[in-house]
Structure formats: structure tokens, C-alpha cells
Image (cartoon, rainbow, N blue to C red):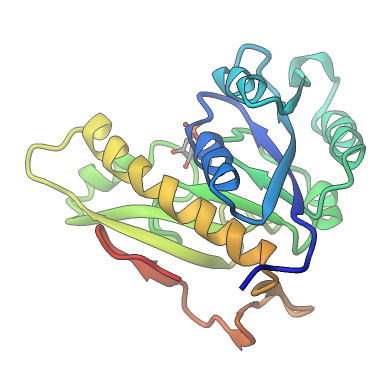
Length: 223
Ligand code: GAR
């Protein structure tokens, strides 16, 4: 059934290649009910900015090194974002820790994608750490962002097997492929009005509290 509501305006924050950004752009071009209005990078040479330009999306580079401290950068970042009046902000490989004031400002409308099965492996080097721990399963998570680094409520996870001859790069590539499935899925849910964060910080999907994240494995979909 065609949706009556206007597409959700989204601002994406990136630091690097932007392959998750590309997955979101592809989803909107294939009819998902959201529009990325701007892509902002803290790294001026991030390839993701070029991806955005190729699709006619506004870009801005805001180099964090030009600011005296984290709070100064975050308030400039929030001003740049709010100029686009987005209903949602997505962190798509944005490799900066955000201040609590920034996170609070976007409460309930800020998502992150993280390359691990949270709460396992918050922070960096997740693939190496999963291999060193001897895990047989690894994956990625999309979560609402809260002030705790990689700690907000998880909405959707994708699991992948860890194979005997994996190194961090082969494992990362397997996980990244699934990231490109789960991020557009969650942004679509939010854009369709199916997903929200309540006043107590609990995610709701289709009117029900999500006590546990939704999970998909390779080859499975999640509607
Ligand atoms: C992705 O694997 C994403 O999960 C990760 O950075 C990569 C960005 O790739 N994010 C984090 O580690 C955040 N803590 P991309 O630029 O190709 O989307």
C-alpha cells in the first residue's frame, strides 16, 4: 500500500569509505521512504563524501582538528546537522566519540551501526578481538545511540559464522555485507513509523517493546 507520509529526512555522519552510506542511498533510490539530505564527515578526504556527491546529496566536511575541544566540535556538528532539520541522524562509520549533550539533543532519532554482536566488543578492533576470543559467531548491530559508547539499545543484529581460516579482513568483509542489509532495514522501519524509543529508553517495534534485538542470519530476511 503506498504510504501517505512524506519521506523521512536523514542526515548521515561518516568518517571513511561510506559503504553503509551507499547501502542507504541504494535503498532510498529503490523506494525506501527516507531521503538523505546531507552527508557530513569529520574527515575531509573521506570517500563517502564522493559517494554522496555522485548521487546529488549535499556534503560538508567538518574537520574535528579545527576545534579546540570535543564540545566545540560537537556543537558545530549539531548546528550543521540542524540546518537540514532531519527527523533522523545516522552514524555510518562515524569514528568520533560524541558528547552526552550531543547525544541527548538527538535522543530517539540517532542510530549507529557497530561491527560486533553488542554488547560484545564495544569500541575498536572488533573482528580481531572476536578471532582472538575463538568465537564461532560474529556480526553487526544497529542500535539507538545513548551516552554510553556502543551501549544504547540494540534493534537489529546480523550474525555471521567465523570460519577456520578467517583473518580480521575476511571476517570484516563478511560482517560488512550484512551491515549493508541491516542498516537500511532499521532506517526503513523508523521511516515507516514502526520503530521508536520510549521515554524510558526502550525501543518499540510495531507497538511492542523489543526486549531482545531482532536477529537475522545470512540468507534470512527481517521484515
Ligand atoms: C563499518 O564496519 C561500521 O560498522 C564501523 O565502521 C565501518 C565503516 O565502514 N563502525 C564502527 O566501528 C563504529 N564504532 P563504511 O565507511 O564502509 O560504512
